[in-house]
Structures are given as structure tokens and as C-alpha cells.
Length: 180
Image (cartoon, rainbow, N blue to C red):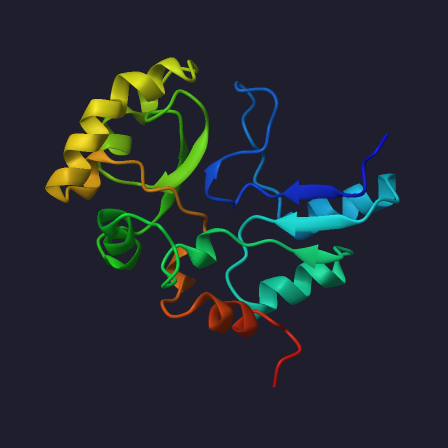
């Protein structure tokens, strides 16, 4: 088949979820449990992702059977990231206290910091990607230009509070569960 391995993404991941069914509601299953289930059913190597917030999470995923771990949100504030200024600031802003899976910004389920737009529109959000994405584009661009975090999609996984600043090499080295 040409498949050399599998990426197993848990529901704690930021941004759009890795699901083929846009109407599927993701179950809140720990990524380590998903890795164990996939490893029990399939001999292919596994890359685990989703909800990784530090070296303990990396160790747990490796212990669950992943060959390696991928991170995303942990790199949003590193020096080399292309994260917008408003997004970068929101990740450190104490007024944001949780994330949510929402279709409000794009019409496709994605995890973001729960801001005013999510609060106002999540309950009525429809599954209509990419139409909703295009409909909200001008609003998101205007909010970003104004530095308004309540009008932009602030994609972030559940471990966003642990996303450090600094060089990417240092952040990645700090995720090594075997480092002394």
C-alpha cells in the first residue's frame, strides 16, 4: 500500500481535526488510549499527536506504543513560528481560560481558544467548510489588523498554556522525556 506508518491524533490537538467526517463529534479520549488501540489493531509505526504539553505527555505517548510524537501548539510561540502577533499574544493572555471544538470560524470542527466569536456563534455554527471560512475571512482579517483576538480563530490545542517562547531547538530539546 505504500503506507509506512500512521499518525494518531487525539482530540486535544489544536486546529482542524483529523477526521474524514465533518459532522463527527470527537470523543474526549486520551491520545495515549488511542495509540494503544491503534497499536493493538495494526503493526505499523505510530506517530502520536494531540494534547502534547510537555515531556511527561511525550513519555506517556511513547510508553503507549508510539514510535515518535508530533507537536504543533507547543511551537506556536517559538521565535521561528509565523504565528500572528494577535494569536501569539492571546496564547499568553490570562483572560483565555479554555479551548473549544468549534465550527464557527470555518464550518469545520477545529480546536481554538474560546473567544467572544466562539461564545456568540458556536451553538449555531454549521458544517459548511470552506464556505464559512470564506464568509468569515474579511471579519478575521479586520480583527487581526486591529489586534482584536475576539474576531480571529486562535487555533490551539489543550496544552496551549505550556507553549513556551524561545528558539525551536530549545523547545524541542525540552520535550525530551529522557533529558537530564
